[in-house]
Length: 104
Image (cartoon, rainbow, N blue to C red):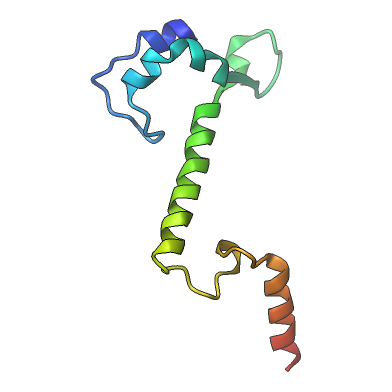
């Protein structure tokens, strides 16, 4: 995997993950443990029966959620009725509210 990362073309775009190829190339040795083959079907000794999974993409998605949520909270753009996106509001709070409305 490190060999593949070191051979990346640094003139290519970042793609959906958003990490520039030159960063991946420079960190090849450290990142090679972040990519894992996941078995999808059949005989586990056949390479084609695996799909790649990149832990890097997961980290990027999580960071994107945190940054977006922090921005939305600071800009006061999240509706008060969005229970899943506010601190100190949960699905349980929404269920209590909806049950109360239905009983009226």
